[in-house]
Length: 373
Image (cartoon, rainbow, N blue to C red):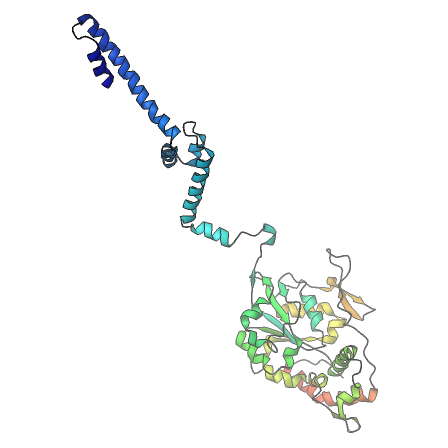
């Protein structure tokens, strides 16, 4: 409009002929002035701070639209400043629940996903030492519905102060349909153990592997002698006075074989029906038969059968047949089935006389004659 006023004063107003042309020219010049003024705004922005129009585009269309726009090309410094501002804004924004969970607990690879839960044991092999507890554990672990701790936990006799959470942490992961087991043979002869297991769960099933107490004592001594070569003789440890037939019941190898006395303590906390007794002798001659009864006691389908065993004549003990995933059969360790130390026949007969009344009482308590004569 300023251009029109300027031209009106420059050109004489009396020239009627030229007035129309002037007005037409004025309109044209006004248009050109308007265009110049419009484009100068863009020029000013390009030569000065480029951020106002770019910020407008960012607010309207976002970063991706800004980068693709030809009308808003940021110099390198401006781009760096913009990226820095975006990061600050992102840092100040509160993290979503999903993002926090994702960062704190990254998803493990599929191959490392753990199934099942760690549960307190449903069944425990509580004894007895050198009776065949390791064999029972290894044989029953073949069953797909049984998961067991490989090592002796000694929770109820040595580690009870660590608490049940510590004990549960030792257990393998099991599915809802599977049974969790452990074995610690010293439980059977530890006075506090029955009460402690009952406090954990009165429904716990107990398995006791028993063996002729005389043979068991000799086996116990043989194992100890292999670790302590300077041990006194068996007779020195077993008798207070052998000539009088006085047996030293304070020696642990002798005391363990007093099954009736130990069982009395267990029956104060558990009914007899909740305790299953495995014959250590029949476990050698008929492992499938003994395992069938163990599976029945645990409420399992009879899957472990005679097809899983063969008799190793060298060890004098049954072994598991070669599984498909292994190149060799599974036998127990070198300490199992070792040759016993030779003991004087008179000492053996004296010990049988000593154990006889205890054995008879034990047969009556469990309702089964193990024939240890």
